[in-house]
Image (tube, rainbow, N blue to C red; front, top):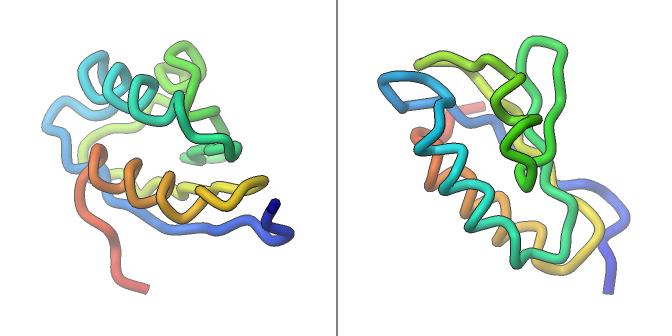
Length: 93
């Protein structure tokens, strides 16, 4: 069953060196098995959490607020939880 509305969460990037090779590799590996579409947005740019190249181009630094969005399958909430655990602290709304 597919979700009609995308799920969204804001996450504060907690990695000291920003969104660099280590967290990017972890994101790509951990999101590969999710059926949903998982995207991260920062500073007007959006990237697939399943694409290392797109994630590198976001240029997010430590402390950046990223918007994580997942849609298209029942595993969207689990995918967002996974991304949030890799990136760091979930911001309060």
